[in-house]
View 1 (tube, rainbow, N blue to C red):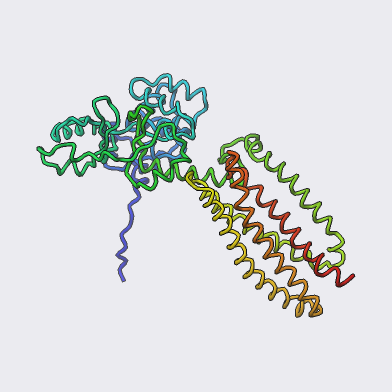
View 2 (cartoon, rainbow, N blue to C red):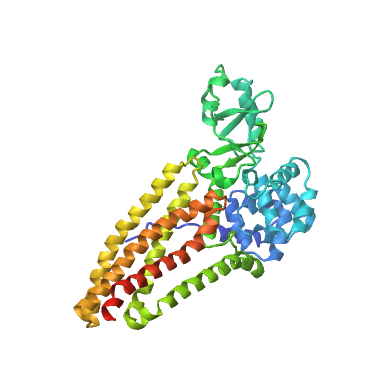
Length: 462
């Protein structure tokens, strides 16, 4: 049978052949004009530094800047240019893309390039760099279209056409009043289909969502994500538009926030990357590791208290990891739920108490189910595999099952109360609770398990 599957063309290979040919510069630019910048970026990544340095002048700084937005580690390629050419390429980038590139460079090079940026490009880049990394303003772009609210539909269309040449984000047009304050937004489609005699006011959405430039990303990311708009305006304190957050910016901010939260749950103060120095990684990890070491010593000391229990009934140590793991899992699940709920600043005290009781009930129900399962499985294992006496096997199985129930109830409660406590004292619960909850749950599980064995079994064999 003839294979009718459409063969995908290899545009990168075609571009490599064009770049490595000896055709004149004008013809080369004409040949590559039909290719997407992403494919051109892929071709540049496969070329040698010498080949790229020959191609950059042919493409021109504006085209190079467009291509570089599709390259992951673009600072490596910018670094191939001298400082003047690098500044020229960056000046043609959207302000947010330019900032991303500059932040990947060393501080001295970045500062030199910023000082060389002139006009609107330099002004916009310096504005975004002025914000802290955790502020909305650091994620925005100044690539947007703004019109006045007193224009006619025909005049608004002319203004749109005038600004569209320099701005890609045209699907939402932002409107300001006579004092340059944010007034609302117009959907591009509504403006295009509107009759020329339509009042522009009828097209403006005056209740359009917005965010403040100094708002903390983690505090408002859920709110802006729920709107699902192509872009959302970023306003200064005096309600003037300083930029916008595009849907891509929002997705990247969500990804960064999730990565940061994951790092915090591991006890790190910030997310690490592949290029981070060893000493910087150590500084992030060591403080919590020291605290966990001390808590681990406490757990080991508690286990030592039950040394006589282990000596009298050695088989019980085989099931210690089972109890510890299940308690840790239950606590971590409650922790994740609680941290997510605590992001709502409008949560009342009554709702927090309700959450604590709910997690206790979940821990109880899960503990009863898993405890019963453990009792049955361990009882059968000890009786028929280890050939223990029926009564002895049943007692140990009861202790394991009972310890599972107790530890899962308490761990679920602690997984809720600990982050609530840190939230109350204004300490980030994601940072403080993650590493702490596991060790505390180990302590709870050890006391519950060996305590039950001490109370139930030791008196019978003494």
